[in-house]
Figure 1 (cartoon, rainbow, N blue to C red):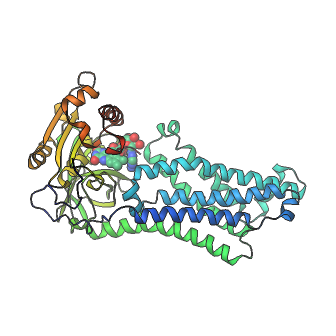
Figure 2: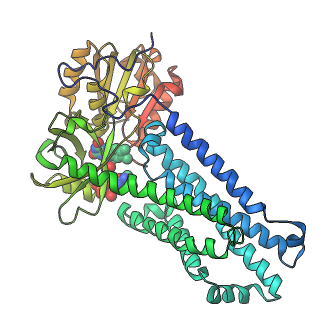
Figure 3: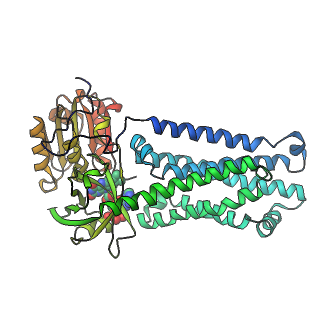
Length: 462
Ligand SMILES: Cc1cc2nc3c(=O)[nH]c(=O)nc-3n(C[C@H](O)[C@H](O)[C@H](O)COP(=O)(O)OP(=O)(O)OC[C@H]3O[C@@H](n4cnc5c(N)ncnc54)[C@H](O)[C@@H]3O)c2cc1C
């Protein structure tokens, strides 16, 4: 077993040279690590901003402590909200290192804390002002709402955030279509926007404090700029430049198609085998939604292909999308690439339509890598792209194994895995498939001696 230099030529015969820099790959981590440090320093500055004005005189007044807690929780909570936005702003240099699935997980993980801080801010400040004015809390809340500038919009904003977050809980999400959830989630941007003026106009840390105001405004501008650039402008510029259209839709089986798009200089897209794009089809009924699909072969100068299995409305509509339909893209995204490969022996596992990124990754692997591919499907007709996989495996002098049949008849437990791939413990593993399969496969791999850091997976759900 030895370490693979990721700059080895790819295994594909012919095709463009493995020019990593041109295709958007940089040696890992530096900018992502810097982004992490910037977030930490930002948090420290916000905490300083929240406590620097407190002294024994202000804390000793009626409601002084409650107001101090309200100010600090408000500032830290708002900062957390901006961090949540940045985590899902699809910053490519961060996403390429961390992965979109992990960024979304972190976004979800900090959300309850951030919302709790914002609710605590509202409650503590209302109590503080009520004590100072010697009024009841409910009456003070109403007075603040109706007489203090920015308070009504900030409250509407907070309610929008709470609604968006409630719909993200698994139980609620199960009852909503992805698109409904997504539209509700857009209200978070409204909620954040509505709270902006409230913080600057009523936060005592900012009144008559130009440096603090400048810092706060810069934070908001930076967040808005990152969202505008990475989520709107970059995809728009990229889509306009590549000018993609559907060229052909080829059936792989009854409910899976491979769609080839043509466009300008697609070999300049900074995309690697195993990555995905968010695809938007510019036709009635589809233009407003973008869905993630992995590429199923590397781009040529003018073409790019992906493969879709019918699952719901969007994927079903793609089975009959007309050639000539214009296409916009966002991305590429994903860390399921050869850049994570450390060994020269790899096992690629694709179950069902999970073969898609495996197929493109196989094409992108360095030539000297010893490859075994395991394809899993319930029925033979579900083994899509299997002939292409076998061709690339042959080019590598590797081995392709197929396991076909229902899970109760053809299990993927540890003994079955070791029978199919006897040297599995010496390999680095990339796998993609349905959630249940990935879970079972992960535990079989670990039981067979593959440590978790040598298992890479692509999940088709966030
Ligand atoms: C990183 C990634 C790569 C993928 N690659 C492929 C691929 O190569 N081939 C393929 O057939 N499928 C792929 N998928 C799955 C594909 O995105 C979904 O099947 C498709 O979006 C379902 O949409 P729908 O309207 O047809 O079904 P729905 O009934 O709306 O959704 C079915 C499931 O897909 C999820 N989903 C729907 N829309 C999205 C979205 N925009 N983002 C994330 N999840 C969503 C829903 O939460 C639900 O779990 C990939 C998914 C991800 C996250």
